[in-house]
Image (cartoon, rainbow, N blue to C red; front, side, top):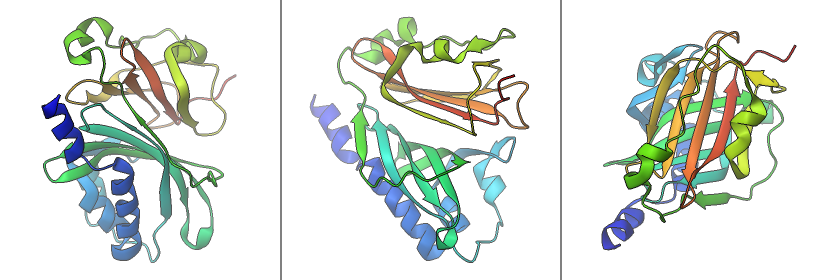
Length: 239
């Protein structure tokens, strides 16, 4: 318990890192801040998956950065991994949408390892919902039997089936209307917190736009993994 308490105290709230990231973008330049806050192994979809630092290398900062703020965070029990979601607006308040970012707490502090977003109407809320995965039930010891299955395959899966283990208040995001079913393709990236109380996976979405992918994040509730994030980018529309 003392070790767990030390780990939690060593990880400041990820919302603070997200706000500092946004402030740095406004102060130092948008892509400069993205490079500064990226982990060495961070990934972006441009539209295909590629190393973030390669995608951002040499990219000139726009005259004015987009602005953003977190409205929802989910943090692992041990404070080693977190997810933040919120709203972004374009320069001068034009345009906007939603974003979702996976953060890892490295020795130097929080660094993002995946960043994505969608166009749309920004959520006007400034209230932050901050959640933590449960510290009960020792997920690291039982994860082999409880880790969410790999559901990649040729057969389409109903979206409601994917959401069957959804947590209350699950974060759901997509480009426009969500399809009724998805063909879930190969795993493109995956990971989890050190204590495995948060797990994430990105799968390709065959039949969608170039670079189409599905991001999911599961949070340990003390007995099971619950789907806490379901984020679709470039999915094929329902027919």
